[in-house]
Amino acid sequence: MRLAVISSRFPCANTEPFLGVELAGLRPLVERLVVAPLRPDIGAQHDTGGAAAIVLPPGSLRTLFEACGTFVCAPGRSLRALLAILRGSGGMVVKIKNVAIFPRALALAGRLRRDRIDHVHAYWLSTPATAAFVIARINAIAWSCTAHRWDIFEENMIAEKARSAAFVRTISERGKSELLRRAPDAADKVAVVRLGTALTGARAGTRCGKGLRLLCAAAFVATKGHADLLEAFVIAHAENPALRLTLCGEGPLLERVRQGVDALPCRSAVLVRGYVDRRRLLAELASGRYDAVVLASRDDGIRVMEGIPSILIEAASLGVACVATRSGSIGELLDEQSAFLASPQHPPSLARAILEATDVAERRRRAARASERTRRMHDPARNAAQLRALLGGARAS
Image 1: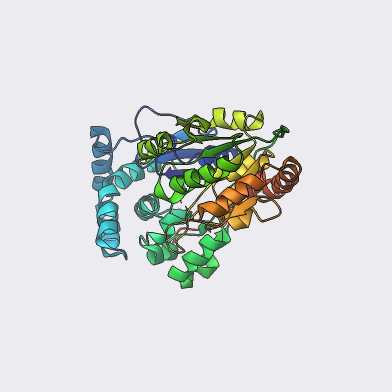
Image 2: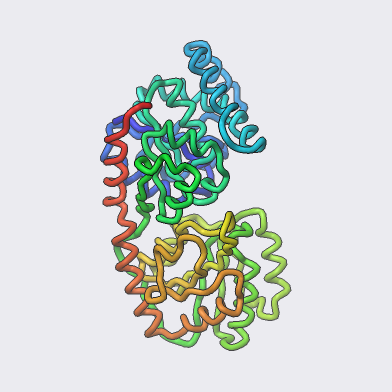
C-alpha cells in the first residue's frame, strides 16, 4: 500500500503531536507513507516518524500550478468534486471553508497521483477529510479518515463523507456514538482505534514530601479551562503552600492566562513557560521533574469537551499521576482508581483532587494502575496494526 495522510498542519506546526508516533507505527507496515499538511506553517518541521512530507504552501504559485494541472488533466472529475462539496450538508461557514481548501485539494491530488498513492487517510473529519474526499474522487482511489472530537460536532458533510469513505476511525467510544448519531447508516464503517501514543521505556519516579509539582500542558483555549485551574490552585495552595504549578502550551488565550497568573495571591507558585518542544516536555516527565499532570478541561455536554488528551496518555504511560476533570472521553482512559478526578467547571472539586494527589502512597498506587491500563489501551504497535488492517480492507467507492 502507498498511503498518504492529510493532516491539518503537522509536521509544519506545533500541533497534532500524536501524529509523529502514529506515523512511526504505520511506516513499517506500508510500502510508501507520505504526510501532507493542509495548512502548513512554513518554516516549522517536526519529526514525521519516517514519513515523507509534501508541503504545498497555501496561495503559492507552486500550489496554483499544481491545482491548474490537476484540473486540466481531470476537468470532469474536478468539477463533480466541487459540486459535491457545494451541495454537501453543513452551514454556510462550513461550505466556505470547504471551497477555500478546494484548490489545495486539487494540487495535492496531482502531487499524490504522480507519487502513485493508492489510499488517502485524513486526520480530522473537518477540512482535511474534505480534501481527502476530493482527492479520492479525482484520482479514483480509496480514502478514509480519523474523527477526533470537535470535528464531529462541526458537522462538515458527515453523512456524505461516511458514505464515500472506506471507513471512519474514531479514537473513543464517545466519538463513535456522536458520529453515529449524525450518520446512523454508517454503523458498519465506523471503528474505534485509539491513539497509539503510550510511551515505553523508563518510568517516572515519585518523590516524597508534602509538595506537589503540577504540570498543565495544554493549548491556551477555552476548552482547557485554565481559569478554572487557576481558581482551583489558589484554593489548594491556601491549604498547602508547598504546591507548585507550571503551565506549558500556546494558543490565543496565553496572554490572558499570564495576566490572570500575575493577579493571583500565590503568583510566585505558578510558572507560565509557554510553548515547550514535545520531546523536551516528555523527557522532563520521564525524569521525574513533575509529580502530576493536571487538566481542568470544561464540558458543556455538546461541543465543549475533551477527547482523550495525548498528554494524559503519555503521562499515565510513564507512571506520572494524573489529575483531571471528567470531561468528554477522559473517563475511557482514567477512572477513580487510576487518577484523581474532579467535576468540570467546579474549581473546589478540582482543588480537592489536587490536595488528594499530595498523598504520595495513593499517588503511586493510582499512577501504577493508570500506567498499566494506558499502555494496554494505547500501545503504538498494536494500534498501528489495527489501523493497517482497516486500510488493507479498504476499497474505492
